[in-house]
Image (tube, rainbow over all chains, first blue to last red; front, top):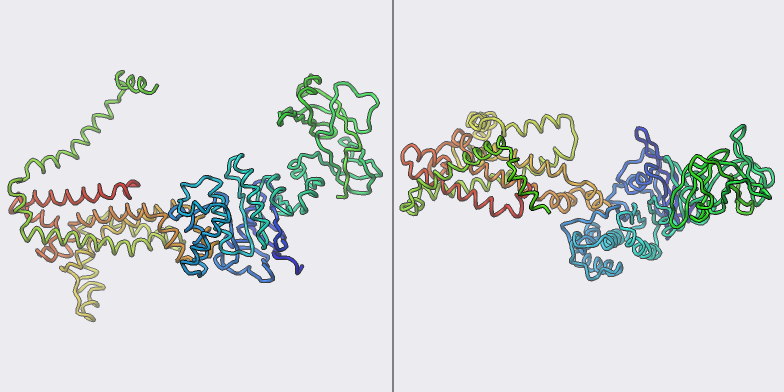
Length: 350
Length: 270
């Protein structure tokens, strides 16, 4: 695809692990690499930066093959998880370091660095040592330092994970603005789905070294394709065969049947949110089509709601109010009736 | 809350005397000789004895050679430490072991070995003499060589430890910013391991200043040329013990000034 800014196939093999993925990004596009620990996200990022050799594959950046280039010659900027600001340099010297290394003369490098610091709102902290900066400020210096080399590919490794929850909100929206201004491709590695949804134009989900899903945040959130993604976005997800609005999950004794909103054919995914599930002690009258008798597996508090995990012919999560739980008067191990309206059940081709 | 606790611990006689008594004996053993130096020092004639040309020459020679030896150790030792810490090649462990040999062999043996290598008929010295007419033994250069030989390993070990402890991800960060390996070493790695370099340099300098065995074997004892302070102390001890005390006091003072002066900046990691 000639419109891509970044096109790459990355293969990294090491004992017990293999990363094999394709990744592309348009100019100005922010792609989040989302996945559980050990999925290979950081490996992919390090391979793009040239900090890790590729077993196979290649990296095309704006039509140029940079696969064989050493790290210091790649037109990249990288923001590390704990920023890795040089402790013996001021904020300004940290930001000027890149331009200096790339041949800008000292005075101009310092002037540019001052501009980049001002752009991230830290014009007053040019002389501060990293140790004197707050976490949020250090994150912005790290971003300014990466942008100051005018990279054509920006790599961010868990850019917000070292921040406390409160700072993260502010820094996240600032980061989003700076990413919007950046005209090259940007890859953000994260394990936080919310971070991926807010920061990225597109989400690529990595599990066990391969891409399992790729789409806009909205697509991924609505139509997860693996258990991991479904859990991330808080949906109950099943795979089965559809005949009209009826979907058969599994076969044999462990099988179940789910009624969906829209008719489908062949292999489909079905998904519904936990808050669409209602729980009863007695079999509800009128019996909606999606009614199952399941065993309560566990109960946990989730914000001002209660999450009830059930297992049986179907494994599912229900989200109910504490009042509803009190009315239910049930403990793990007991059996309950779970109901979901067919209008709440989404189905899409697998 | 902690005060009564601490009081009770001491008051209740829980202090393990089996540890405290040997500790006290150890401290006394280390400090008493210094007290002896101070008590027996010929204070009234101290100034006059200090100003004799022999003492000034020995002190100047010691300070100069120890500093030059430290500078050479830094120049050769830091790259050596880097190679040992950051590269892997067959025989790296053997090289590392060999580098530390001068720390454990008797310095006199080092002096003999230096003579056999750089003496006029030595393995290397022969060619130095035949081709350039240069003979190292019994010159100030030999003093420096002896000091580098025994003291550089202290610096190498200290810097190598600092390099191994340094977080290499900072070097990766520098690489993503476009820094070459040489620039990374100079502007990122070296500043990071500076405490280790400082501590190693102090150790190296102190060891050079006190060098005796290898020096007297390889460089001899020529006043004004190769007679360093420790050798002057030893010689004075045979003929004029009072002067030996004065020289010892000077050495003690110089060492203390260096240690105290640099403690704040560097030696904290010692």
